[in-house]
Image 1 (cartoon, rainbow, N blue to C red):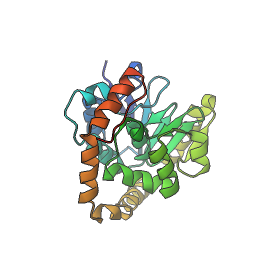
Image 2 (image 1 turned 180 degrees about the horizontal axis):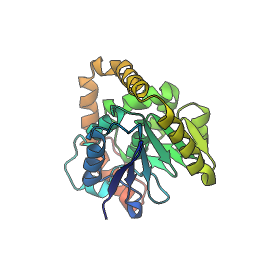
Image 3 (image 1 turned 90 degrees about the horizontal axis):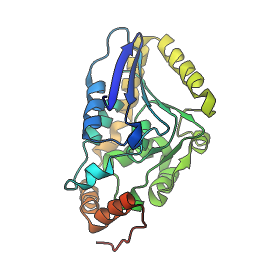
Length: 251
């Protein structure tokens, strides 16, 4: 069975992460499939897209076994997330469970996030010796602001969905048993809006938030690349896979 499925039914394009046995961890195949789903232009009748996931976890981030087996370098996740962010119609994430690291970024690159109170969001990169790229940190700052971004990145502990809703980081919250009803109401409301308005507003938001791309950041990119290739990064991922505490040496 495909690890990512998608279909269009009426006004809604629905994309499903379908690897529940691996907590929907994103491997290269899934990243490519997600990017393909959001580079296919919408049909005239489409009004929005939805990203959801099978199983109890929304997305645990990048597949660490696959990632640790290859030379460390930039992840193709950035191109996939850019395709979602710049998709010409609104994108809604329905988050039933934890959204961690790449899963957190996947949700945050959507226009609206409808989350269960059972869900948690976080970026555990510091706990495994990694650091986000400029592109990924930029989105987190845009959505969460500097104080919450510092807490999420520097501590690395996940935050409950209810807390992020209170802080205005995610748009909708629901009791676990009411998630589908709340998400359905959001989808219905979007589908009823004027399609040309939706496209124009989406383009405005994306363009007006693009100013950070013009800030010089080559030196920061070099620091992140050094982190990716460090011994600490190898140790952190090995420790996480082995479910043990990592021993970082700053090398």
